[in-house]
Length: 252
View 1 (cartoon, rainbow, N blue to C red):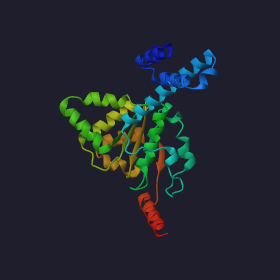
View 2 (tube, helix red, strand yellow):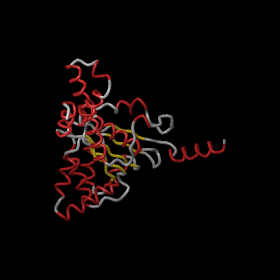
View 3 (cartoon, rainbow, N blue to C red):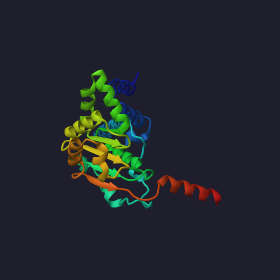
View 4 (tube, rainbow, N blue to C red):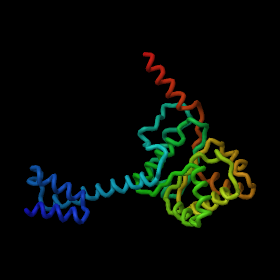
């Protein structure tokens, strides 16, 4: 076994897969002749760093469980839905997460709210932030089951550890007493510490009503509404517009 093969084996045993791949590629080409020893070492380290960084991003994206795998590049700003391009693109920066700010996205069904919020979450993962996505109904079902099996505090702790918590379809189903209390506990843990995004078809002005209990509704709304970045979408369903475009294209 030659020295290069022995080095490759050691790199792979140490799980330095990026470095091993770069070393193999370098040895199999004429590139090795153009590298000085320090340049070769720098190249191997850079490749390993990139490899680990990309794997971390993919792990974060998988763990987030987004409804859509979307990015800012895929958002259609040409649609008339009251979506300001400059305002949204400013959120592609990580500063709002570092400052523990929150975002509320509201608007009728079919305007692409879940797609937009998935893009925001995807961007957070690219920056290395731990992110999780839940629909409101699924979250409260999980929390209700966790109360029964004794894992409730563990589930809440898992949510608290996320840098970005996304709650979609807020208010589509009525809140019961347990759901209201769980929502308040989540907010208490996160406000001023980590960021969250809440997405709803229900206008913010009606959130107090749909939460139900006046005391808890006051506490929830006071903590989240007045201090959040607001995106209020309006207009015709994006699904209908795209469907019409496809129909028109098929007639040409």
